[in-house]
Length: 101
View 1 (cartoon, rainbow, N blue to C red):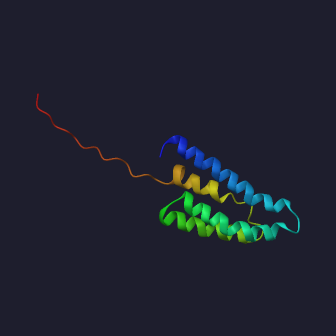
View 2 (view 1 turned 135 degrees about the vertical axis):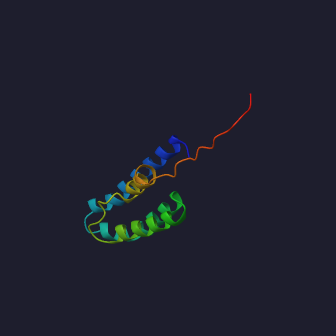
View 3 (view 1 turned 90 degrees about the vertical axis):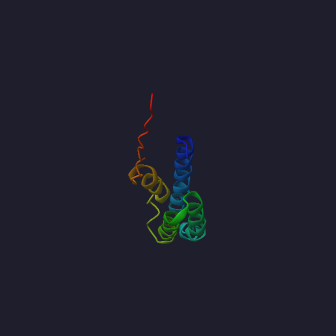
């Protein structure tokens, strides 16, 4: 994945986090919007991040969106930070090459 792709993923995640937080601005109807947004957010998270980590993150974002007063947690942004900043990537292995002159 190129740096451009990584940052596109970050921008998309920030937009999704803002959509999830926007329901708090709508009195009375906001909690019902969360019921609609939670499964959509979970599918988007699973699509953005593959494998076990993506499945776990999709469950977390679903719970975060469905539970009251947790909309302020930027789940998509935190997942991006985990994936590209905090998670230790395996280091490449150096293989010495011998050659005869």
